[in-house]
Length: 401
Image 1 (cartoon, rainbow, N blue to C red):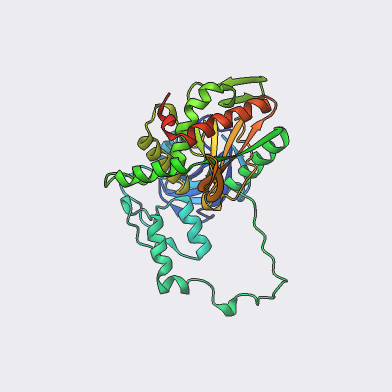
Image 2 (cartoon, rainbow, N blue to C red):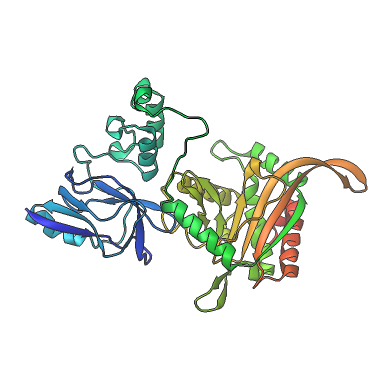
């Protein structure tokens, strides 16, 4: 037997460090090659690290919340000499995916995403007792939900007598800020602190757009998903940004340079269990309406179920954020740095307005947008939103490039 030190590998695209979200093993545990040993958080994704060897865990370096630099010691194993020799190559591998492509699961190994593991821990469920319906016995979110509904799941929590008595008004709960939530907090603080936000709110009459959306949904085939307003908005943004390229840009602070993009890589702000993520629809300018809607659904679902790759979660040139039915009247969205603009979509509501000289009930939606005032002048920001408003109020023009 020999001592093998597993050092944190590069998790992709030049990652210099990663934060420990949770240990999936403890000292003394016997682990199999490929078995998940830790959840690590990069900028906006949580990934599982597989064990590079079969052996016994000797020690862990760090606790949840600690940042470990790439190349630094993460975990020490005691393993057979042959296994250690092969592991040195594996530990240097760059790509780390949530699931190791091994032909079969090792005995006692539980396959599940980080989100599913976290949900199980919070609910007091032992994943070894859950039957997985996914590939190679992987436990899918629906498998855990089924387990939570069974009577046995309810009995897995500590009995009431074992819990401390509840004292109204006196109890507190401490929640350590870890992983994606910590990254979100840091990025939001930096964006608000460093970027002088200019906000602009305008109401948009989407009556005709809603009529078109409902018509297209009624004509959709059996395999087509229902259209929401988001694909129309992104499609309308594409020609508008051709007129206002200063809004489809990044500010590179290190070089003091504005980078304008011809392509539109639309970030779609998405609420997940881990907090706000921004998956990216790449080259929106090349997509027709239905493919654009399908791509929005694909990347947002990947963000929600924690299957999104780093590529999906980085590289947006402008962000669209929507609170859906909770959208309210107006909002003040925070810019997703290094971008210079963000478009906020508020709730659609029926209002009585003057339309063609007469009182009418129309469907009205506000756009609440923010711009980096260092690089986007107030006039240009207002003109850009007015151009977007015109396209949305005359939806046929959305498809004229």
